[in-house]
Image (tube, rainbow over all chains, first blue to last red):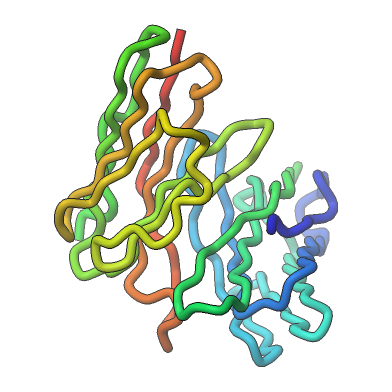
Length: 113
Length: 117
């Protein structure tokens, strides 16, 4: 089941912060975050596993609340290079040992000078 | 490693023609995924393989679509006959281990942009 993302789009000025949310109606094993620039392939940012851990690198971090099946991506002190479409991908806890990553509709983020 | 390699990068064809998209995953990766991306529907999972075996093809739109993975280093996605609504960017991605201790990261190829006239 496709996760829901919010907001659909956001415009920031350099240095501002942003939060992108992802939620699912299903119990999740993991949440992935990817960024895609126009005309390019999605690029991995991070994965959060069941256990509610928070991760981050540089000024991008994320949290995962497994009880609420929600994840948030935090971008602090945004840079022009942060512009792109952000996708969350969810892996649902299923009955078999195999599972799949389903992506949300994406959040378009534009950072302007 | 060269990363995930897809071909062709661009394909323009006429309705009714057969289209074959190719993918070479990263060596040693056990999982291979085919996604389709359109403005309307976003990134849709079509099918995925584990150790060359198709695990879930529930995302394949209809019988016109088929995918194979004859060996660990090659996969094809075929559309026959193609229709204008199949126009999209088709991404192949591979992963070493979806639930591994490391990352479970999906490594995407550059995509094949298909236009069906």
